[in-house]
Length: 87
Image (cartoon, rainbow, N blue to C red; front, top):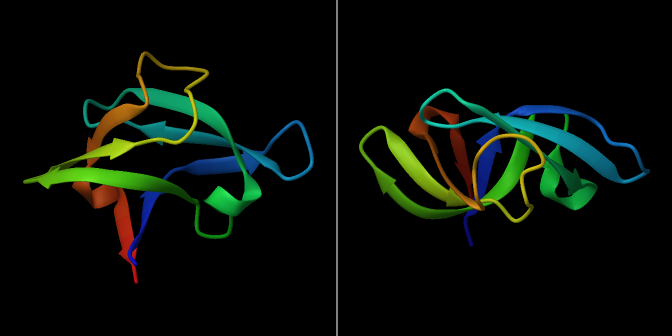
């Protein structure tokens, strides 16, 4: 199974086991959300996402958590360079 990660900025959340995550869309807009520790690799600034489609220089992803900031839904286009895939 391939784990898909999105490069982002990660900081501590308000509660134990929670992280604040800030990411960038393909258009360069910022969106942010909170994620539990099991979805985050804080050392490498990565968050787990579901890859729906990869085309050319962008990827359509599903973010498992609702954005608290940014005008995005749960599906977001991000730059392909911001994706990390690991087996």
